[in-house]
Picture 1 (cartoon, helix red, strand yellow):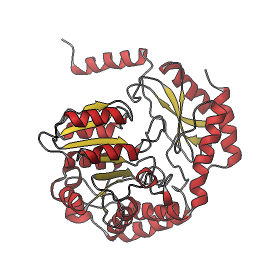
Picture 2: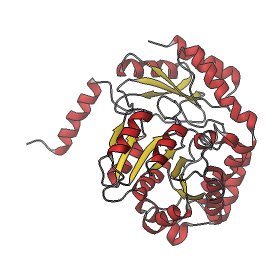
Picture 3: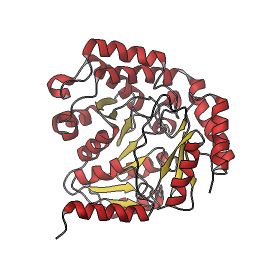
Picture 4: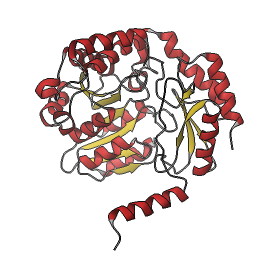
Length: 375
């Protein structure tokens, strides 16, 4: 009789045959790679002001938070960051709650917005954290064809007035396209539904002051709207946030398992993220560099220009995508390699993420390398 470990070995063999084996690739400051795989869109992860803020908090509080926010882990650094993010993403009435990761923020937000009998609808391209949030809520979601506003209207009509929650991203994490947020919110508002928008790839990149896709759509602080974001993309840090009315924050603090039972974000990371946010909001030229480089990359690789800093380049198959990424790495360029089940449409691709902190000469050389290595 086979052991469970034997079963897992067989499953690994099947994945290998399908070109779906995943490999941990260590990152080293000395590897010399031009990084078009990470999510440090504005190049702030090593900005001296950001590092100084993190060092000061590290000296004050130590390495970790030492406990959950409700026990011993809540600091002035967390609270200041929450106030800043709440106002930026939610307007005057917005209240933020910071988590140790964007993943946990999404899990907690979806769970908090649902109750027994809720009609839960998620876009078919929604991030895994939103998908898993549906499971934590104990609900089987209806799947919305990607950004299909008319179908959403029909789905909410069929809900017949039941409490409904709709899950979308502002900028989608694989293809980099922008959701039609104004039209989506018009429909959810008409049916009294809640719209949850994940701003992971939009915060710090698009919208006035880098406030994201919701702000770009003129919806900041709109009723029936909640926002999540990660601090690990344009802010070059770690952690996540949920922003909404005070009632939502109170509910998350009182009942949210992914907040209550998790050790808090390290204070040094919270302080560094806050400093990065201040830079992102103030430096319009830095933010403008992201769409400029995205457009340049799209032209060089023959794909549509993305909404923000995520660029998707299709590959013929999973094995070809892996080989393409390997050739790029061998030539000094790090790129993302996305294969099923990480892709929403079963199409393998390279995913490039623009970093405004990369020297322009290196950036242009990297684009040429990727194009020449194409299968």
